[in-house]
Image (cartoon, rainbow, N blue to C red; front, side):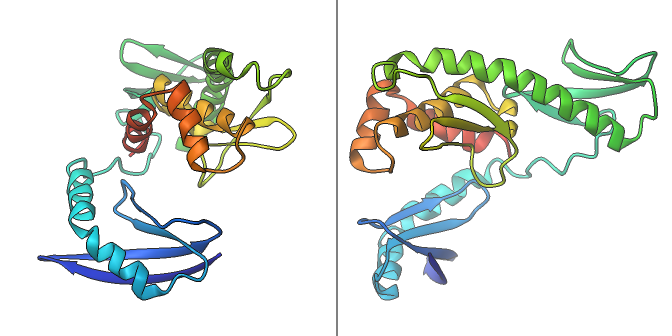
Length: 237
């Protein structure tokens, strides 16, 4: 995979974009919630061809950038101090930290209450909260999988195994051996978004790429997948 960058001007807007040359047949332009404009182009495509496509789509790109800007400022980095907010299944909860006789985390009337028998340092609070998120993710992701599996039952006799791990760039993946890996960060997203990620990956049981037939299947089993995907992109900012 190779990479290049470029800019185009649309009115008073300067649009910066990156281009990834990959093994695909069509050119795709995507605008991400963080303001990145990413172009995926077939290997061998001339840069001028890519740039002209961005120029042609500049009005649409500008509208997408303006849409995402309305959600700024974005959530600042978490410091794991009482009073800040944390996401769980798409809802924001106020973090409450206190000392007690044991270590525990509970949801309580709009709060995520972290009690620690040791130090209430940010590092300790973060550790307890991360463990709580992982425990919740195991249960919630399995519930989601059970909801999403029926349309795919006839394609595979054996259900894929689920494993969780933190991933920087992907929400999920499905291996050829049938292991469905989910990003632990998904526990912060709404249930419908978790269902979307799992359904998306299960579609790879039938199609191991992102061809038109892949999206036909995704559309069939989850007609509102684009709405869910869009909500996911906005829910964790």
